[in-house]
Length: 137
Image (cartoon, rainbow, N blue to C red; front, side, top):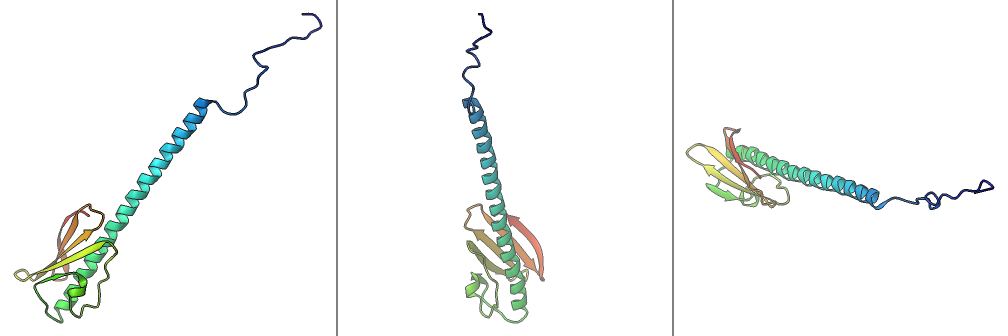
């Protein structure tokens, strides 16, 4: 070649944009991050439901102990609406409380069942103290 003109066909077509492999790697990373955030969100939401049910059970137990010192009621009561003269407790959405009085032990068994279908949570209150618990919401 005379005159100093050379053509290089390899560099004649410059690469514009990203290759398919680079795009696939980015999509995979974004997918992994999205899955981790969804799992984290569902775990945090479940913990919030569990804590709300636990709070409902503890509030019901305290209210029952206060009521026991002032009044009497039937041996088995289901739901806070059936407890006469009880100024509370409030029950979180999706939580059902079952209250049973154990006359022989002078104690209450308060069971919370959540709508999340993970199970039930049971506490026993005796002398204004939480003496036993079992289950998992």
